[in-house]
Structures are given as C-alpha cells and as structure tokens.
Image (cartoon, rainbow, N blue to C red; front, side):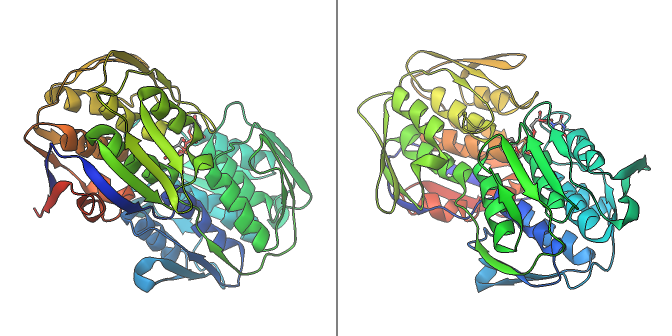
Length: 422
Ligand code: UD1
C-alpha cells in the first residue's frame, strides 16, 4: 500500500488548478441511465471513486469512455442491460445508491445493494427510499439489497418533505422525478452547488426543474430525456483544502478556478483566523497575514454553512492557532477520527461527542500517522507540511478516492512531498 512522505517547514507559494467536483461528478454520471442518448461530462476529476462509478455503470450495460486522460467522460446507455447493482461494487462507494432513482424512473424496476462507504457514522439510506416510495415505488429489502418496482412501470410525481437535509437523497429524488408522471416538489431539499450542477445538467437533457439552490425544488416530469454535454462544477472541497495549505504553512497560493460563492462560509472563518482570501479573475488567492493564525469556532452545517468535508482540514489549521477553538460536527457522528492522529503529531485536542476542543500549540512534530478516511487523510498531509520533521501518512488509498495528483499540486508550490510506493 502506498504512503505519502511529507517534510514540513517551508512556506508555500504558487498556483494550484482545482479539478471538477468529485461529488458532482458522482451524481451526474448516473444521469446517463435516464436516456438512450449520449451524455458527456467535461472537467471530470481523475479519481478512483470515478473509476468505481464507471465500473458500476458498465456493469449495468452503459458504455463509459474516459477521453483526454479521463477529463472527459463520454457515456451512453442505449439500454439498461442489467438492473442489478451488485454488492461487490456498491460496497466500495456509498454514492452507488444514486443509480437506484434513474433505473427505476426509466424502466420501472431496479435492484441495488445497500451501500458501504467512508466509516464516518451509520449513514443509512432511508431518506432516499422514503422519497422513492412517496413517488409510488414498491420497495422490498431482502438479503442486503433494495428490490424496487414502480407500479405500471412509471413513478408518479409527489410532494416529498425531507425531515432533515440530505444531499444524496435530494439527488436520487431529483434524478427520479425527471421522468415521473406529473409534478414532484422536494421540500427541505439540499442546496449544495452539486445539486445546482445536477439540475443544470438535467435541464440540458430536457428536464423541467425549478428552484435548485433553494430549499424547494419543483420538477415537472417529462416522457423522455435526451443527450447533453455538461461541464462539472469546480470542486469546492478540493478548493477549500488547498486554500488551507498557505494558511497553515504561510505564503501565498492562487487556487485556479475557485469562486467565493462556493466557499463563502469557509472563507469567512479563514478571514476570522487571520488568513486573507481575495477573488481574482483566475480564482481565489489565499495568503497568511503576519504571525500565527487565531483560534476560531466552527460548526458544520448543510450548505451554505461550513462543510463537514472541510472540518478535518480546518482542524489541522487550528492545531497551531493562537488560542482555543471548538469544532462542532453536526452532520456525521464519529467524524473526528483524525484527532488521535493529529495528537500523535503533538496537537492538543479533546473530543466529547460531537465537539472537539483544540488548544493551539506553537508547532506540530512529524510522526507516522494513518489515514482513516478521505478528508482525514488530507488533513494529516496539511498538518505534516506545517510540522517539524518528517510525517509519513499511510493508507493513502483513501486520499486517491478524492484528490488527483496531490503530490504534484502541492509540490509545484514548494511543498516537500512524495509518494512511497508500497
Ligand atoms: C454527501 C457527500 C459527502 C458529504 C455529505 C454532507 C457525496 C458523494 N458525498 O454525502 O462527501 O460529507 O454529502 O455534505 O456527494 N442520512 C440519513 N438517511 C439518509 C441519508 C442521509 O440518516 O437516507 C444522514 C447521514 O447519515 C448524515 C446526514 O443525513 O448524518 C447527511 O447526509 P447526506 O447529506 O445524505 O450525505 P451524503 O449524500 O451521503
């Protein structure tokens, strides 16, 4: 298994291109199942999660070709040849559940294994299933699989009110509603930029959707959807992660393709910590003002609040801040698994349930540490860049699920980072 060696100390200066969003791409790809015509995604990120979704779609009979080194995904699902999403693929990635809505909407039946994914809490899919049930689906849970049927072969429009915000459930319901008979209203819908991107792509395919980006999305079902070409939105989590690199190490980095609207609440916290963020024509320029950063309190929330997917990386910054910071995790229980690893590097962190109290120290020290999930792994790399001495992050297969060319991107700004093949 590969590991990453980081030698800490120096400031970072330069520019980092930000890729298309993994989480947007993972919800856009299943949209191919809604149409017999080709769907092409440009600005796709090159990640192992995308390879897993490719494999899943291919197992269902879709053609998926990665062009231009994987930056363009040309997909075609002339017919769905197999309506069963197998456990062997689904268990690798939770987003696999997103093939359920489209298959059910197009052909009136689907069988999908219940998913696995990152070990950050229970993460059930009950809201996905309730939304589809409200649209008329008959669901039967047997042997770890969801067996779904639409009576008469077609879902019907419904009012779906989510009890709390779920990105994935909103996406599954949105995908399914495009081909349902009648009008669907999604209330308390997620407002994430990835949902807006999905709605824009579906509209290009002929769907009738209003209200994406607000808490109420209205979809007028159509009889068929056609092909389209769609650019994947910028990855706001990769963006935020690299914005933290100069914040932690000092220096100035321009994140190309970044926009303030994608990371406004996060940028506000950086500003409060003493890190400047400026929007330029090419992206976002981030520089650490003089001296140590200041402690800030952070609470994770659905968009437009502070994203849970940046909590681990933000904690890495606050480990060396001046003062005491409290981080509250409101989206996932059990999402502080990076804390014990940061403590190995000299951080002072107390975790109590959904809160972590971080008392800033002057310096972290390099240490061998272990990545426990995707965002935790990159937080350890960021911490290593600011630490004295060497840090070796093992189990980096988590990292490869969500960050392309991380060594090259940070290395180009002066970071001492290399992959050790294992
Ligand atoms: C997506 C993102 C993930 C991000 C998360 C929150 C993808 C591929 N992943 O995950 O990176 O951290 O949004 O921004 O886009 N829940 C239920 N029942 C359900 C669905 C969710 O109880 O049916 C709970 C979850 O356990 C969690 C909360 O709802 O506590 C929010 O989860 P959700 O927004 O659905 O996250 P994902 O779509 O899985």
